[in-house]
Length: 317
Length: 282
Image 1: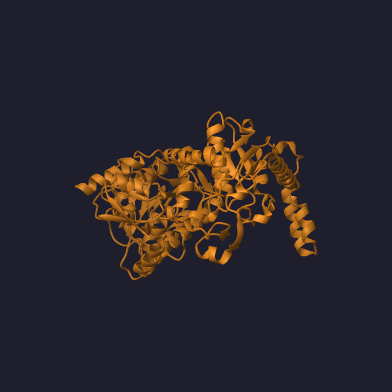
Image 2: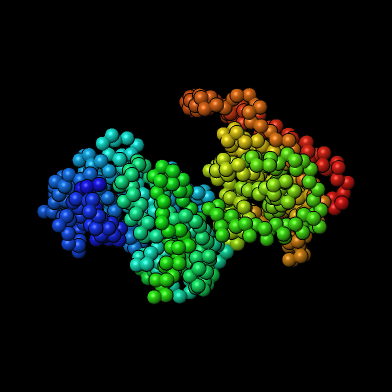
């Protein structure tokens, strides 16, 4: 991992990865691709504007070609806290990601790491107890942010199936991330003073610490394995157990009411909790970590209780 | 703490204490053939299903947990509607149940767990009182296929007593679907006696676990190659006229043989147990 390319550096994962790798002396050069330049100054860092509109539409492509990269980190920006549908930007995001991915394949970049999300599976009543990587991508495609991931993954999975000899393509599917300074739908939900839950439902959850997601990406770059991998911390907690660990109170809401209100508030833009997120409060979405522990051999530093307690400490400060 | 299946040992033990009362004092369950439950290996309990709500499955769980030498936990495969039913689904998950699906069942069997399968499904629990102890069709061959696939034995299990706890005289499927259930039952006592009618009748129960049926003992039909050939045949059949019944008869003969044998054993044991039980309540 000497010459690396990171996309989505304006957003959560790309930005964090860039900061982490900029302190890593083993990395000789970093090329950041996004709509804006990153706020980090480093002699090893270069950036190129990511745009599909003329006259900049060749800038990223040329920069990628010149970089002689050995590792590409594809961090589509829609993975971070923008659970809200922003059709235009999400569409351009996935389009750009697909273009970069195809370009990387033609440039024969040896390692391509795609950061996806567990949202591609979707929280559904018919989910098996453990969802393995071979499970169908049944996330709700009516939401652009989920559809973007699925479209990107389908392209990546097709490329993996063709078994390219020159590139190792890895897809990482992390679960809900929490950390001391992360803001996403789950962190905002758990930050509510009184947490509404669905009456009669208490599904199990998996979590991962935000630092472990970054560690998983870097680990994968150093130990590449082809194919998709689920990423989560060890352990499971039910929603009520999480709320109890946070020393918070919950208020049970009738699920029919929550569905209707939640959907209409989401559609009118008054709520950041999408129906896809609300489904997680009702149905189980537990990932099978067998492949990540046996093939990828990634071990997260944090267990699920540690993740919650760290989040609690941040809340108390 | 829960595991990935949603199983919670403390909740399970609490539920077992409640079930102990029903097993020991209310339905006074006699259990035969508990020695057929493997000590450590995986197995599939295939049972007749009755009683409007799946209390028979819970009683099988209780019997295996309390009476097997290693206090084994049997995992029930639950109907899909339970996953979206508030409270009930949650209780079932925590007590050691999973949604009835190939993935879940295979995973549990591969982990050498005991699973409970009711091939009659909701047809069994919703049948009319006049059809008691008549097996509904085992038209889903999934359990036989799973047994062949995982090489785990099937334990044919017969339950009597569960048919009389809620004797269904009428069921309304439309009203049931509105409430999120497969049907809404009307029994001799419910809703006539109000909430009191929801109390199950204290019939006398007997459970019999028969000897395991091993898939290896059946002739070597249904191999992958043979299935591929069947698929091809079926494809050819779609091009030309083919008798549907004949086609069904040709599907996976090994699975069909297992299903027929298991159904026969269950039915034979039900008849024997009914003769043994003199009265419904004693």
